[in-house]
Amino acid sequence: MFGKKAGTEELEAFYPIRPECVAEIPKTRFKPRAGKTLSARRWQAAFSETGCLDIAKVLRRIQRGGIHPSIKGLVWEFLLGCYNPNSTLEDRNQLRQQRRERYSMWKTECRNMVSVIGRGNFITTPIITDDGQPIEVEGCRVTSAVSDKKVAQWMLILHQFGLDVVRTDRALAFYEDKANQAKLWDVLSIYSWVDDDIGYVQGMNDICSPMRENFRCSTTSIGVQSQLGTLSQVIKTVDPQLHKHLEDLDGGEYLFAFRMLMVLFRREFSFLDALYLWEVMWAMEYNPNIFWSYEQPDGASDSNYGQLNQKMLKQYGKFQRKNLETGYADKNNALAVFLVASVLETKNKQILKEAKGLDEVVSILGDITGNLDAKKACQEALKLQNKYLKKAKRP
Image 1 (cartoon, rainbow, N blue to C red):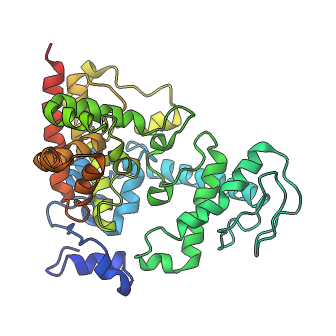
Image 2: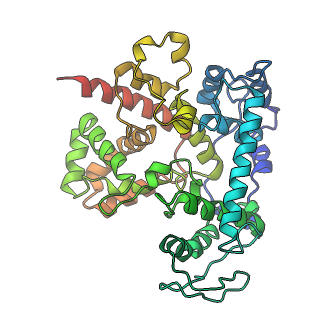
Image 3: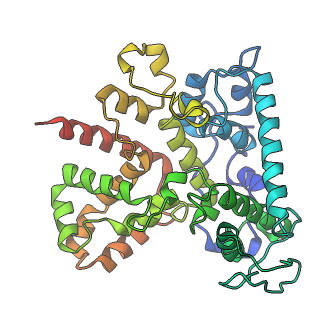
């Protein structure tokens, strides 16, 4: 797995790029490294005979060198809280089957309303008018007027999913196949029906969607706005001169960083480097209570920090562990916030010298596309977290 030829060519076998797009995409910096990257062999060795996972051992590897592409999907299920590391293989098989049955039920429910769902195709034009009257669309038929408000609102945006899907990672050979595009459209369509509190927001197609709260919107705020507020506070604390300059440019709300936080730097990195960045971030932010926070939202808590011994603390990622040790519990204190802050710090001198307006700030930050090193960015974010927590604690 980590032979002499391990590198870009090996990775391209997992995520092939369309030949005509190779020159257009950022260069991939991530390369699997023996002794650092979590390999399939190390992954298997981290399980007990009954299937329980030594999550501390896995987190150490991921934080040092990411995950080999051959096992990303399997590892991500744990990092994102789909499974409890202390569960057995039998527990997970049962839970997986229950979830598949539930998804199948939701798909059937949606297909009964919109026939194209789950059939390997998707739409890019409206299927009903604003007042619920059917519009004839090839391959998708709505037989009668729609009077139910929830159903109508959902149907009115289905074509928007399709428009976003055809723009998603067009450089990847995977999305040359319309059936694969349709799978993404199905997931977005079904999710927006089931979770109508969030619904659909542009950008979900890019991450499909590990950060639900960032897409929560109301008439007065956007979900990511809370993180922008934390970003403002971080820069004000660690670099008051830069913060003052941004405020003078009417950028004190930090809306220029909206996209980076909304889709987790997806547009700033190559596809592979974005995956590497996400998994390192998730490992650093990992909380062993994450599974229970989904299954039993009222039952998971870190409030008994004083009772956690060193062995238990190792089950947390570096970033989350530091928050526990300092008692910093702001839920908007995400690693992504410190990543953006670290990027701003690297561009500090240029912003102070050249930015005479927000357009120049956006342009300066735009220059980072394809030029960021994900590992170094995470390391700088951790340093900035330490600096911020120390200064924030001062009277």
